[in-house]
Amino acid sequence: MRPTGRALALILVAAAWLSSSFAARAAAPAPVVGLHGMVVAAERNAAQAGLAMLQAGGNAIDAAVATSFALGVTEPYHSGLGGGGFLLIRLASGEVIALDARETAPAGASRDMFVADGVANDASRTGPLAVATPSLLAGLALALERYGTKSLAEVMAPAIELAAGGFPISLRHVRVLEAWKATGLAERFPETAAIQLPPAGLPIAPGWKLVQPQLAATLRAIAREGPDVFFRGRIGRAIAADVQRRGGVLAASDLASYRPILREPVRGNYRGLEVLSFPPPSSGGVALVEMLNILEGFELRPLGAGSSASIHRIAESMKLAFADRAAYLGDPDFVTVPTAQLVAKDYAAKLRARMLPSRWHRAPWTWDRDEVAIRVAGPGLGELPLPDHDTGREAPGPSDRQGGSTTHFSVTDAAGNAVATTQTVNLLFGSGITVPGTGIVLNDEMDDFSVAPNQPNAFGLVDVHGTNAVAPGKRPLSSMTPTLVLENGKLRMVAGSPGGPRIISTVLLALLNTIDFGMDASEAIAAPRFHQQWAPDELSIEAGVPADVQDALRRRGHRVKVAERNWSSAQVIVIDPKTGWHLGATDPRTDGLAVGY
Ligand code: DON
Image 1: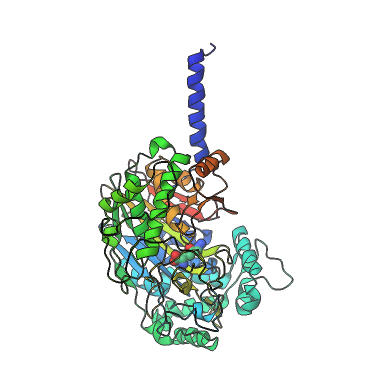
Image 2: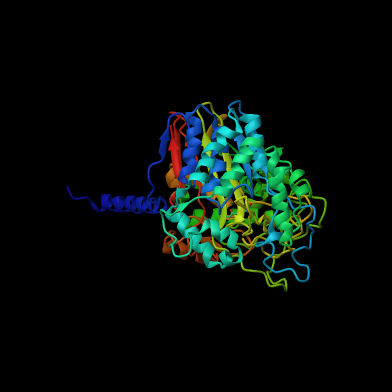
């Protein structure tokens, strides 16, 4: 039977609707299913290390610590003993702990250390002054001691084996090494190149076996003697001595006085679900909840995932939250951070009321800050100008170190424990420095501070009032956003990603795609991404956003910029509320692994 005119029209409308929703649903493999637990990580060997702990009767915390140590070996350019991280831990009892193992500025650091005369303009990113006190190990040891069931030696065993025995590098690993080589840093840090790159004459190719005997020896010493050998013993002394020899300020006493901090997570709720994320010194949790609060006032689902109407609203909410990031956030032990006000529903309602439904608008708006009820001690907060980036000082551009360096993994177990961990050395191979004899690559987390008001860091992030200025012992403001979603008190989702400030928008989109647009875990992280961080004022989009949608966004006034490459590497677990199955998804942009059991 031939369709009538009316039926044909309906079919066409339905087809158009289907095709637009399919456009937003990027081709994605089905999520991996685990009946008891799941580990999802950006590197395969590390995911397997976590799975091995679960299968050996360990809990999610044991698995997370094993995965973390292994990632430090298999992705030495992203994270490891020389860096820091955040662990968001949910215990089966329902308690949620934000374990802050963020690096700190050395006691010898000072507010103007990177703008002083004679200091190289990339000193916050490369070399000895860029190194903040390495701290990840303190967080892992604390997590294991308080919430794990296995010994340090047991959870470190896979990492030690991977370092000592080596592993064949993947295609993504090859691409990272090529990108790092292209920066010229391999010549500047030959001790790092000697370990991390194939010997002269051999190509950088998949399958080359990376063996790290010195790192293996360091890990063995920690497994045998405990973290003290790192923080108060010979490894810490070797780290400090090497940094100082190169002209840095990190001292053995900085390592000895380092303490991880157990914090209250940031809590929000979105369309009836509870969202728990990382508090300051991360900006991630505050910004995520602020954006969700703004967006809760819109019906996103009927607008369709990936439509210009939904992208517009979501991008405007990002812009507002990032403006507040620049204005208010920093280490809460050093500056007053108005977290409660920023994540309040009534504050979001006021921001939402100022948004234009169909047009880009300069943010923040001209408002009376008292009216939105944010008052902080410290810098006078008037209207915030969009910072202009001309500070008279030539700063290396945000893109000089392509591909930042961070990794996220998510773990669940049968008992209801879950861990979301994001860990980092900041940019690829951090400061570039490998401490001789230890295999430890040192971070360049000092660049996450603002070196001067309104001067963008490597990710283009600015700090309007100096709340994120360098101070001795202070933690640099982070964007890492390990996140949990609960429904009726039960775990629904574990999520996170690397990507600098794009972490926050990546996690937001993973949540919205799941909660509002009904995508499964894989579809939610495969869908094309977009990002707006207030400064610079541009809407960065992945090339997968269709041209007509790009045009529509331009017509709404957005400065649309199609990114040269896709970004982030989200690692997500969704728990199916009906079956209790653990559904894992690793980002198709990278070559990680979701493994369940
Ligand atoms: O803590 C932060 O926000 C940054 N150090 C994270 C850097 C990052 O994610 C780079 N990754 N692609």
